[in-house]
Image 1 (tube, rainbow, N blue to C red):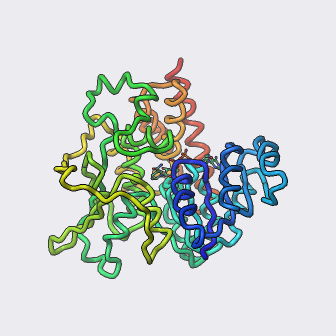
Image 2: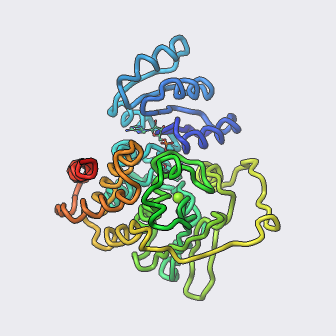
Length: 385
Ligand code: NAD
Ligand code: MG
């Protein structure tokens, strides 16, 4: 039996993780589940999985959670500190599936307990980079990537021969606007942006896929997770999302991981690793698929890719500013306060306006994150005015 905790259990990745665990109840024991404020969804999942503890980050949702779990014997708590405390209950396997840099403290707390921590939540790795990796190393924690591209790279990357890797090739679906003109993109609505052609995901990452900020975040994520230089990581648009990423070696061999565009496959890989588990996923039908297409990304329509690469190459505080400004801009776009193309403009402006020294602690990252959010927030107000 593996003990499991899911941070962000009510979201898209959290729900996929629960689905796998609930299909194999003899293999997993749920220690704790957390959510932001969906008390009803969290309580239902806690009851189904017989979890020991359920925690909401938003304390205002705690009375509802308590009421929903009254008489079940499931322990409840509320607040961001309670989420961090829950991350250190000693689970063998923790899924980090909170969205945004809000997951940074819970992720580092989980790493400090030294088990296996699976990262879907990419923003903390982008913002705090080396500090997160160092925390894992210091506490003997195993960090496994659930993001489909990074999980694919992990499966193809021969770490004993890292010096024989020539390129890491990150595939991108291109999102819902891959064929749209700039003029069409100017007018898109939140509903159009969250309707991803291949994947079903939370609202924030869906908008990130539409702007290709997601691929920018993933470029930085790849540089954090694997021993390669920024210039060894290439992005290619592959609209079918069947090849999840590739690793090329110096002899010309390229290893790729293929699979359905369903997060349950990469999550299952991390749940069973180094073993494999059955997911009952339908086999890929190559004849029905017919073809796989590839094209170079368009940096004019998707400036996020250029901004991310610049942030990664300069490193220091740049990735944290890039991420924080994007979180603010995406929230403003979803609230219909700004247009779609303003998302990248706000990120670029925030990066231009703010140049603090490189952070040397998680606290310093969070201070930079907060200041970048404030600057991006001002820029949102300018757009509205
Ligand atoms: P989501 O919005 O569907 O779910 C987010 C979860 O985090 C929910 O359980 C929510 O209650 C919780 N949460 C939100 N804000 C919080 C806060 N401030 N404090 C504590 N908990 C909070 O998001 P998602 O699509 O599941 O994505 C989660 C993370 O995984 C993101 O970082 C995303 O980039 C990454 N990811 C998602 C997918 C996918 O297919 N959805 C794929 C790869 C990576
Ligand atoms: Mg991904």
